[in-house]
Amino acid sequence: MKVLIELPLDKYEHFIAVCDPTCREYAVLKNSIVIGPAGQRIVKLICNEEDVLKLLIACVMVCEELTGPIGKAIDRAHAAARLPGYVRKRVTELEMEVAELKVKLLKQKE
Image 1 (tube, rainbow, N blue to C red):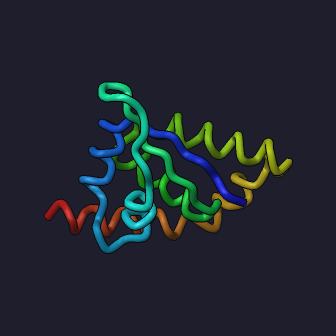
Image 2: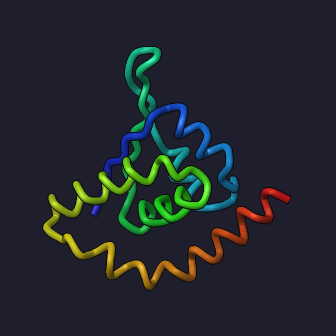
């Protein structure tokens, strides 16, 4: 399943600035386009469900204001695919990845 995410440009710039350039989340964020007139620019990116969940977890830790737009994108994709419970099933699988992301972010801040 592919997920289309739309983020405000200023929030995107903050999020990507605090991401580790060697992590998957950074690569996903860099694979985006910026559209719209000056002052109203948004960033659009398409990613798979695993990558979007990693982005959601990372933004909870470093850019909490993006959890809303990313969560809505997941909800829209699940509604379209008729898989509303998918996120809940993946939470346990991603708990270990959350710990790894925290370690990467802490190392980056050092």
